[in-house]
Length: 329
Image (tube, rainbow, N blue to C red; front, side, top):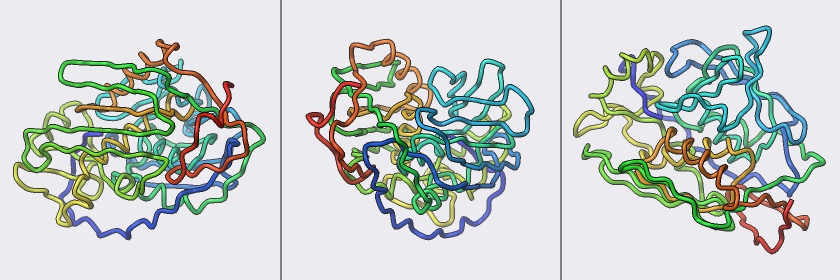
C-alpha cells in the first residue's frame, strides 16, 4: 500500500511484538470470541470500527457493512476486487465496497484464522499504525476454536508467471508459503531491497511490524485522487529525498520490502485457501498480485487442492509439512 500523511506528528515508539507462532492442527479454525478495533481509514479519513466474529467452517473471511441495512455482505475473493491501485478494495454485486483490507487479511493468515465475519461500520478498515502489529497483538492471544472440517491447501504443481512491463511475479512449487520480493526505487533511502521469507519457518516479527510508505513528492498526486485523507506520520513512513520524515525512523533495515511482503500475504488469502508455493515478485503491488491470482486461477492445471492425511500440527510460522502427508481433496 502507498500512502501519505496529513499532519506531521511524533510517532510514538511502540512495544515490540514478542511473536509466538499459533499452533493449529489440520482442521479449520475460527475465533472463539469477538475482537474489536477502532481507528481511522487511511484513504477515506473516516472513523472506522471493526469487530471480528466467529464463523462456521468453509465460510472463509466475510465482511459485513453494519452501517447498511441490505446488500451488505462482501466476500473475500480475488474476483471481488474492482480496484487495487493503492490498496485492495472488495466489492459485492450490488456495488457495496470495503477497502484497505490487506493488513487485516495478512493478520488473519499469520494467526491461522480460516473463517470469520468482520463487521465494519464504514467503507474502510482502520489503518491502525500502518502495519499488522495492532491486529496481531490481539489475534495471537485470542481464543481459537477448532472446527470439525479439514483445512484445504492450494498446492502449486508447476511454475506460473506474469510480466507487466518492469513488474514481474511468479509462483513455483514449494511445500510451504515462501515469498522472494525485490524493490527497486530511484530514491536512495528505499533503493534496492530484497527479502526472502518462509511463512511456515521464519520469524515474522519484522514483516508484522513494517508500515506502509510513500514518497513525499507523490503526496499531491495521491491527494488529487481524493485519497490519503487519514494518512499521517502515525500510520505511514514518509520518505523525502535523502531522509525519513518520521522522527523515530525505521523499525527494521528492510521495512519497505517487508511491508510489501505483508501486503502480498494478505492479498494471497483472497485465493480462498492457503497457498503452498514460492512467490517471486519484482517491484509488485496490490494490482499486480490481483492480476496474477486471476491468471493462476485460470491456469488450473498448475495447482491442486489438498488436505492433510494425518493429524499433524502446523505452526503458521514454525513448521512446514511434507506433501507426502497430504491427499487430494
